[in-house]
Length: 465
View 1 (cartoon, helix red, strand yellow):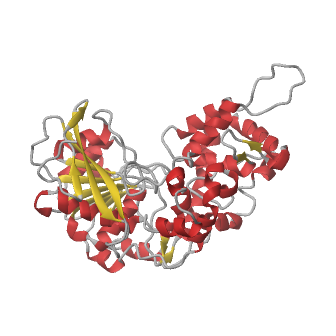
View 2: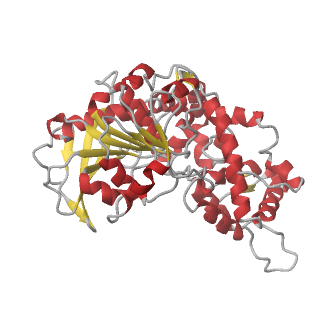
View 3: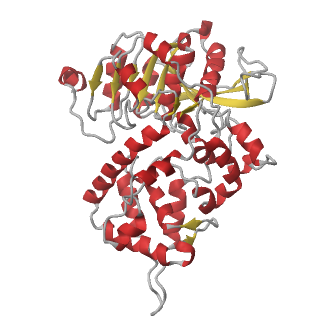
């Protein structure tokens, strides 16, 4: 690796390389695992700098992109496209692999197995939340941005949660903040129960939309659920050694109900649910292709961090206690897959939810069952938001409904301090142009409507026309 003059023991800079119409270079940082005890373990954090081709030496402001998660790596650019193309006209973009993901000391099934006990796993994992993601971001900013100038942050989904944490504890490092689908509830203690009560209602709407688009899938999915329920152990073995059960099948909503093209992928997956009967009298069975696609869709083998830390993104000084599982019980039998199938009703999928039984049924998660329970019962989580400081920031936001918005009392108080502009679907390049034209001290924006059909605010229609 060829280093430039900014390289040091704690920061290594690579040479420029390219993909079509973009120039890239890699940065690696040695940061404390625990910023409260900097002399303890050190981990590596990776960030990729992206500039438009020909802009490598041009003086441009910096934009840090915080992606969704927890547990997912930052995008790997293959060419100039989408929002990144537009952003690179005005910024140097920093694609950060949040700690524990991508090339930032990744927490994988194999790397986590190096710990000799569940307690060690849980103690280590507690340092992989938004507060330390922001500590890493500030560590990087003062080393990568000339004169330690503040930068713009774009947070998507969980990255938006991190951005609000950034606004809470290090606002001096920020020039602008943009959020897309990621405005967190900011009450004290654990807000997961409030979030999931609202989320289950939205999930029902998404299921209804799915079956409106593919009504023929109701019967196919009921057949699959009944087949699983009637199998030994109420499930069938998966290629990885796990067990596919009726309630496990419902996890397909994680990718099928919330991502672009998810409805279609789910539909085509169920088209290939069954093996053909080649020999008369052979038992009906789920195809290997279907079972393999199920495992690929939930992908916990490559992202155990999501399974173990998902509910902890909502916790401040209180335990989650398997919130999604407990709140599901409050919904009665609406999400009872077997009951629905037996009664001829549509089977409903779940979404961004983690359940304790996953650590029994998903083979790669079994070694982490005890640590997951420890984390779910942990109460002394550090604060993620400072409501007083958030009120002091000057804010302007545009928002959508990808993530349930302002579901807590403190969130509603927060909302009174801003003017809200509601947008419908629009081309992200035009949205980016609009944002760059505005001159707000602090911007908080959500750009990607997913769930609700909301009309474009008339005052902005000309800007996006």
